[in-house]
Each structure stands twice: as C-alpha cells, then as structure tokens.
Amino acid sequence: MSDVGVGPEIGIEQEIKLEVPRRWTMPRLEGIGRVASVEGPRRMTQSATYLDTLDLDLLRARHTLRRRTGGSDAGWHLKTPGDGDGRVEHRLPLGRSAAIVPAELHAIVAPLVDGDALVPVATLRTRRTRRSLLHDGGRVLLLVEDDAVEATTYVDGERVHRWREIEVELVDGTAEDLAAVRDALVAKGLAVSDSPSKLSRALAEPLARLGEAASGTSSEKKGSKKKRKGAKDPAAPESRSAGEVVLAYLAAQVGVLQSSEQALRENAPDAVHKARVATRRLRSTLKSYRALIDRVETDPLRAEIKWLTGALGDPRDGEVMLERISGLLDSLEPDLIVDRADRDMRAALTDEHERAHARMVKALDSTRYERLMGDLVDLLLHPPLSERATGPSSAVLPKLVAKASAKVVRQAEAAEAMPEGAERDEAIHEVRKLAKAARYAAEAAGAAAGGEAKAVVSAWKDLQEALGDHQDSVVSRGVVMRLAADARKAGRETFTYGVLAEREYAVARSVEERYKPLLEGAIAAAGKVGTKG
Image 1 (cartoon, rainbow, N blue to C red):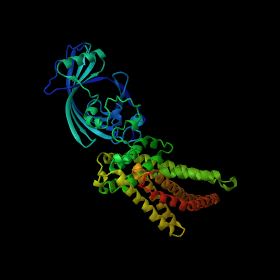
Image 2: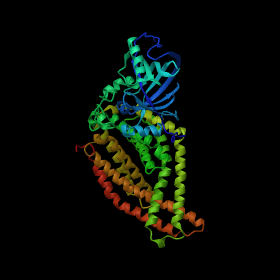
Image 3: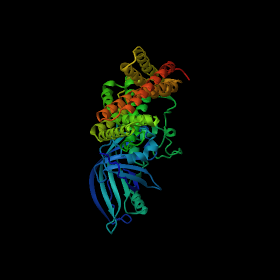
Image 4: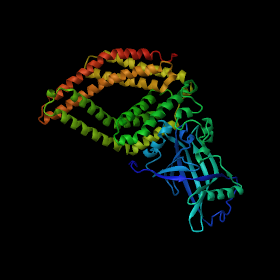
C-alpha cells in the first residue's frame, strides 16, 4: 500500500567529514572541549540505495535522495541545502521498495529533475562504528562515526569504490563542540574532506564529466535543468548516439509514471491520461526501435507495460465516455430527453468510472506494478543496446522513423479498400494506432530526424487525434446501445439513447471526410524526414 498521507519528518543535520589515512587508529576522545565521556563503540552495517537522474541533477544541486536499510535510521532520506553549514533532512518510513519513490519526496525534487526518471545511481554499504560523545551531565553532544564504505556506482558503467572516513555529527552540542573535535582529529592526522557527501565522492568522475562540481557552486538558477546539462547539449543531436537519444525519450516517459502515482490515486484531472500516454510511448518506442534495443529483453517488458496500460485504460475510457456522453446529453433539446435518460446514463457511467478507478489503485498497490517500475529503471541503467545504437543519431534514426511511417501508409491503403462497416472501423482504428506509433518514433528521434521532424510529429498527431474522435464515436455508440439495452430490460423508454447513437454515427462519418486530406498531409511530411530544415 502507499505511504502517502504521512508527511516527512524534518530535521537539520550538521556534520563534518574527515579523510582517513591508511592504518590510522581512533585516539581517545575524552577531554576534548566539553566531552566528559565516550559511549561505545557500537557497530552496525547499513546499506543505502541512492537515486538521481542519469544526469545527476539532484547531486549537482546539492540534494541527495536515498533509501537506507539497517542501523538506527532506516527509511527514505532526502537531504537538501539549508541555511549556513547545516542541511535539511526529510525522512519517511522504508515503504515498499526503492522502485517506488514516496510522493512527498518526489514533489520536493520535481523542479530539479524536470520530469526525468529517478534511477538508482549508487548503492553504498557502510560498516559503521559509532561513538557518542557525552557532556558531564550525560547529554550527547556529538556522534563520531567511523565508516568503512563500499560504493557500487551505476553511472558510466558499474564500478566499485572503497574508502574509510570519519563523520562528526552535531546532536545536542554547539558549533564550538563540533569545531573542537574536528581540530583534535585533524591534529591526529585526519584532513577535512572536500566531498560534501559519500555519494559525491563515489560519483566524482561522472560529476566531472558532466562539467560541474558536486558542491553546487554554479551560478545558474537552481532548478534550471537545461542550463545544467553539462557536456551534452540536447539541441545538438549530432553529438549523441542513436541509443542515447532513444534512451533519453524512454527516461522521460518513466519520469512521467514516477511523478504521476499520487495524482492517479487521487483521481486528479488528466492524471490517468498522461500516465497512459507515457505507457503507450514506452511500448511503441521499444517496438519502433527494436533495431537498437534487443527485443529478446524488451518484449517481455512491453507485455508488462501493456498490462499497466490496460489498468490505466479502464478508468481513462470511463472518464472519456462520461465526459463525451454528458456533453452530447447537454447538447440535446429538452424534448429529446425522455424518462430521465440523462440522469440514468450519467449515474451508470459515473459508477463504472469509480469502480474502474478502484481497480486501477489496486493495480498500483500490487507487487506486479512495483516489479515493473523496477524493471523500467533497470532498462535505463543497463540498456541492451545493439551495435547499431552506437551510430550517430542523425544517420540512424531517420530511417527508423520512415519505416514507422510506411506502416501507416500500408494499413491506410488496406482500410481504404474495405466496404463500410465494423471491419472497416477496426481497420481505421489500426491506422490510428500506427499513426500514433509513427508520431512517437518521430518524437523520440527529435531533431536527429532532420529539419522536418516537428512537422512530421504535428502531421501524425493531427491524423491520430481525428481518428481518435472517430474511435471515440464508435466506442460511445456501443456504450449507448449497451445502456439502452439495460434501460429496455428495466422497462424504461430508450428513445434518447437512439438519438445519441445516431449522432455518434454522424460524427464518425464526418471524421472520415477529413481522414484522406490529413493522411495525405502526414504522408507528405513523413517523406521529408532526414532533410535539412
């Protein structure tokens, strides 16, 4: 179940990190400043998974997000910059797994990640020896933590780093107590660390590659993600491989899902629509770019994404039908509404939508959803890219976009040859799905597809939305007829239902009149993919 509803516990953390030379031993700490006695040592082992974007946007803004197990403070911790030398720590219980970031913490970092996916960037295993430094009255002034750290990082490939460090953390003492112990330890051979956190030390090389120090000393405005991007400019696709461009698009969709969970649970306006579109983009992109991403590994993932699309689909379809049929009812002249048909239809559709939403929330609570979110994150960290994916995006992607567009053309020709009826309606619906896939392929490629990329996306979108109206009218007509059958069984008049069904039939025919010009325009735009704008 979700942990949403309990706000994070907030505290101020003030500590100093010290570098430890080889074969160094802890000196006696009694008598340093106001330290009267030392309690401990107490030994523990802690493991923490740190999450960030693949561009380390949180770390570069001096934020760290982790899920820690073991020790005395297991749970989710988000550390953010505070006033002066201290940092603000937001704490929440462990929750379900590292695959599901608590909504309260995600909301805090959302302006920094700008929709990108949060993925495990490092796992730190720490063997900690803790000593509590006490005042003569028994009050704990400071904690001295002697940490042996093993960090496994996942950015720029998997690497393992090991080191030892000392942390001195202020508890109920003063800044003077902290400084006194720091100075005493420095006098015994330690040095104040340049790394503000264990994570920044573990990821020092990727941080340097991204062109910005982990201390966050950039003069850029906080949260200005695009200005902080570092070495690779998203506006220069020729500097990125085909695989990098496609993975960036996939990461954006995973980010949508991660940021949507709370809104989905609350049935917020448009939340289900956005999440379902993200799942469709994921499935479609993995299919369109199979030449770049190994389908042996991604086809099972596509099947699981399809399950989530279905879980989101029922409440979304219910939402669309309730809005659409309510709008049709509102447009009717009063004398066309008989036997309280408007009230009955709205009540039935509202009930169906609420039940569908409850089923969706149950899906979000499932281990299947948790596993899927973990698998999506793993895809971003360990993508099964082909050799072709290493090629320049501007040379590789246009051909794959053109291939997706060609599928639409073939299906449209087949649909055109069919007589009117249910089979043709289904064939036109397939045109819509393929147009959507072509649009998503062009979106993923972006500027790498050439100067006409935006025109291609726009053209397929126009066709897709027109055919979406056609499909909605077909589905709506079926829903109305089903509700009419229920009303007939209950002995009620069905005249109003017939009026709505006829109006939806007219909508479908009017869309078909616009279909050919839109298709021709999309085909023309798609034919220019790869040209220079």
